[in-house]
Amino acid sequence: GTLRGLQQRLGVLEKDVAQVHDQTRQLHSAHANMGMAMQSLKELAARMRVVRPLLDMVSSGTISSDIEGFMSALSDLNTSITYVKTHFSPREVPEVISALQGARARAIAGLEGEYSRLVADQKAEEGEEWEDSEGVKALVRLRDAISESEASECVDIYLRTRAKSLATMMRAMEERLLRDIKNTRDLHGERYVRGRHPFLSTSNEVVTMLASEIKLASLALPDGEDHRVVVLCASPIETLARITSESLSLEGGRGGSVLVLLDALEKIKEADAELGRMLEGLGEDASHDADASLKTLSGMVERVESAAAAALTRLPNSLKNHGVSNGLVPVPTDVSAVAPSTSAVLYAAQIVAMGGMFNLVSSHVQRIERKRQKIGEFVSELLHAAASHVSLSVERCKDERIGKIYGVVNMHVLVAAARGTLHGEVAQTDVDELVQMETKHRTSLLHSIWEAPLQHLSHVHIASKQVESADGIKKSRSNRHQVKDAFSGFNQELDRILIAKVGWRVQDDELRSEMVEEHCSWVVPVYEAFYRNYASLPFSRHPDKYVRFTPDGVRGIIQDQLFRGD
Image 1 (tube, rainbow, N blue to C red):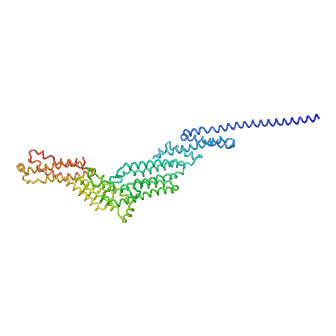
Image 2 (cartoon, helix red, strand yellow; image 1 turned 90 degrees about the vertical axis):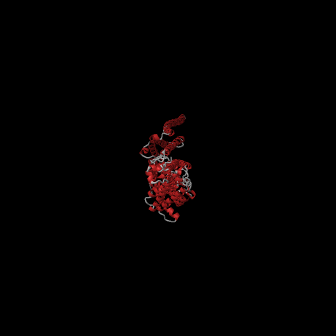
Image 3 (tube, rainbow, N blue to C red; image 1 turned 30 degrees about the vertical axis):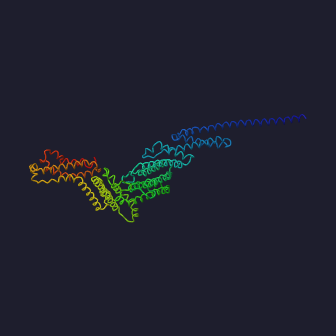
């Protein structure tokens, strides 16, 4: 019985010892787990430490200045995210994983934002200096960084950003153009001078803008992706087409004046060709989008050509009968009327000077008129219509002499246009006819100015023997009065001329020199002969009262004072 009791106690003791062993083993296991947990916490803390410097760079906007450091920090963050996901269950450390992933999202967003900011700020300039600038170098570094990261496509960021920048620039350009058109007068009248319409700089601005865009894309987009810039060209080209229609008054088929249309046609043709070369240079990948954009602009070129052709067919009759549409009344009445800048003639001459544009619109002209007309024939018709306009204006002018000066000045412009600008395409007979008309106006002007003063000199009828003898004049009261009246009448008429000359202005120096020489050769020899015959005779006790001008004095007045407008 004793033995059995002892065995029972030993059994109980063994159980207690086993329990102690189990508890000891559990304590050892728990201690080991606590050590591992402490190590894990240390490791997690180390992984979280990479977040702060990365987010500091994002907040301070220093990514582009230290892109290598930023990318190194981003790489460390990615390594930390991979480690945590590998060694821990998402259920164990959900906050840590969420914080790390959020930090990466902010870093990538900061990288994209910095790239977008630099893209928006850039404007391509000429020369290697711009390409080597810090802004461009930073942009290239950011481009490469985005391509290496898990960020959105670099191309998408670029296109979104530059589309906004281009839209802003186009709005500003359009607002400025509309303001300039509103503030500029006579854009479609005969006062218009080539190159004056504000629209004419618009097409070049768009070309320059898109050329800069293509250049910028070649640096800012990844290799092989620069052709994607073609999608940015569509909106500016469409805007250019719309602006063309609005500023040249093409909507509704009305069309502007022919000189404005030809002027604008020259510019948009240049823009069309230049944009075609630029977009073709982007390669086959861009060809579809490029063709669509260029088709829009080509359609506008066609509309301007057609409108210019229609205006050309109407122009000869318009010049001949009514002057230029929306221009001045074709009747010169003041000082400015003698300047060709205020007449339909300069308008016509400027059109003739744009002879190259006729070839562009000739097919339209033939379709409208249903006849074939050579450029020389049309120009001849145009110039003769303008000549008729001049003649009508001269006849209606209130001041006869100003009207005749107007005729000389403007016919000279027409003759110069016929002779020099079209390389002989105007028939010689037509040129000769215009020359004859100019000569007629010049001769008429000579008579109008000098007929009255010279007529006084022709009223002296004294026998040559009496002229040769001083007594023949001294003893004849009639003879003395004839000489006195002749000099007095000439003096009075010349005084009137000197008063009236204030309104006689000829702007063309070469023409003014020709006219002065003509007037000197017509007047001075006649006066010089009279002066030589009678000035030294004793026809008066006070000869200085009558002989006020010497032949050289008359020549000086003509040379120094006539046709200067003062």
